[in-house]
Amino acid sequence: MSAKSTSDAAVDAAAVREVHRRFITGVTVVTTMDGDLPRGLAVNAFCSVSLEPPLVMVCVQTTSSTYPALLRAEHLGINILAADQTGVAGVFASKAADKFAELDWTPAAHGSPLLDGAAARVEVEIGERLRTSTHTAFLGRIVQAEHRDTDPLVYRAGKFFSPDGMTPLTA
Ligand SMILES: Cc1cc2nc3c(=O)[nH]c(=O)nc-3n(C[C@H](O)[C@H](O)[C@H](O)COP(=O)(O)O)c2cc1C
Image (cartoon, rainbow, N blue to C red; front, side, top):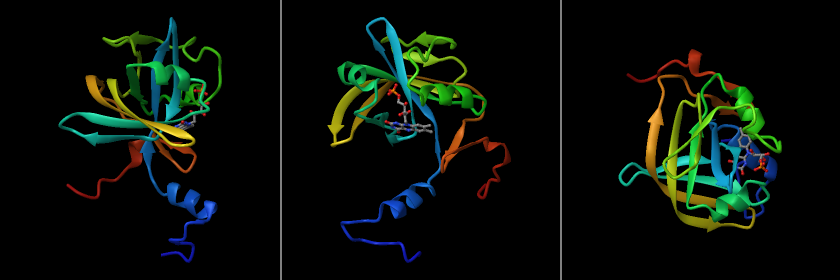
C-alpha cells in the first residue's frame, strides 16, 4: 500500500480524497416534493443496505437546498441516471431554482418525482434519519421499483463514464 496509508485520527485529507477517487459509483438524483414544487439533487452516496427487506440508503449534505424538504418528507425518490443523462446530472448538481423545468417526470405512488429516462427509479419510504454534523443518512424501504433496459451512468474521480467499454472479468 502507499506510504499515505494511515490509521491516525488526524488523517490526511488528501489521502482520504485519493481513497474516494478509487471507488466507482453510479449517479442518482434524490427527489422529493416541497409543497407543489419538485426538488432534487445529484447524489452518488447511495447504496443497497439489504435486498430482503429492500432497504437503501442515501447521504445528503445538510447545506443542500433540498435538505429541509427531505427532512420533512415521509418518502423520497431515487433516480439512477442513464449513460445519456450527464446533462441531467449537471442540472441536479447545480443550485438552479427549478431543476425540473426542462425535464419530464412522473409522480410515484406517494408523490416523489421520478425522472423520465432514468435507468432505474424507486420510491422509498423513509425509516431512519441518521444525522452527522454535515450530512444526514436517510435509510428506507423501497415501495416502488422500475427499471429500463439501458446503461447506467458511471462516475469516478470527478468524471462521468459510459459502461460501454467495460470488460467483464468474471462469467
Ligand atoms: C456526481 C455527483 C455526486 C454527488 N453526490 C452527492 C451526495 O452523495 N450527497 C450530497 O449531499 N451531495 C452530492 N453532490 C453535490 C450536490 O448534488 C450539489 O451540492 C447540489 O448543488 C445540491 O443541490 P441543492 O443545494 O439544490 O440541493 C454530488 C454532486 C455530483 C456532481
